[in-house]
Length: 462
Image (cartoon, rainbow, N blue to C red):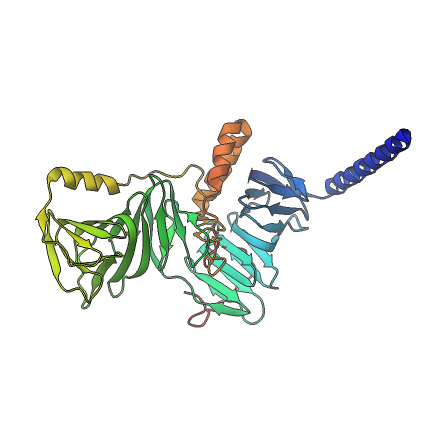
């Protein structure tokens, strides 16, 4: 009996070995397209564990698991960042880059003068093309019933049923149930950061923010531990967010000079340029107070029970957030007030120079780039993603952030990874950056072929 079981086991082992050899031989017959330059978490190439340096061939399928990411460099010059829970197939073509995004989110950067294409499960293709020799960068997310495309730079078109949709640089398009959805309004960008800080976009999962990543209306920015971030708003104003804080950019309309921020907890320093237009307003709301400024420098410290406001320069008007509670206070430079949950602001009092300096230190932010920081966010990610996918590219595919710089950093870190395991680990962890559900792109997309001059109708792209 024992001999029989041994023979069966040996035969089974030989069969598996034979199948593996056949699989290897089959791949060996395919042309080499590039390599996996970085991998973090569970990454597979044709269902085999992929590690940095793995050769990629025609038709290979790259799949990432939860909290996993990968960076691909193709010989044609295209670089691809693959977000978590993504399946991407490479083309059977050594000359043209036609990627197949079956699920998930990717950020694609073309080579100089190159055209790339991302085919999706929706019978829709995203075409991207470099402009004036400058590589194009695009984030694309195909998650559930939604397709998000964000154009970081270059020329990007969406081809499918009907006329092509041109996506201008810095804008995104969301396709859901076959209909384009509205895009996000840009409020500003990150101009300084001390990790760790993240952004939640349109209900998507939180993704890291990186230097130069865009921020949009309705973004919820959170700082964790000792993280801090400085956001430069369009128009010249700036906001510093201290550690362990949460701030939502409800609205920032430079054309009308109408800005509304919500600070639910933590510290914020606002440096607001002089507002000059009729009806202009810069307002910060907390759980207990509403702060109005016209052009000034101020600090807000808030908890669910009370809010303290300090005026550093100019003048600040403070009232309880509940209109039913009457009474307001106007602070001059060097004064402060506290607004309790169910009461009016306390009378203005002078603040000592030591206290002023200590509070400014709590919100001070120096420029500290994330190692191997790839954007915008993701937040493809930022960033940056819309609906369920917004966080993916966005912010996702995980933030490509300022694409070319981030891609170059990722590639550089991947190279260092080959020389040192510790460097590789650091690079891979940070690679997680930016991918983020494409919140309208996700942390989003790119590829391109012959593009038309078609400009989408109002509302197609924001």
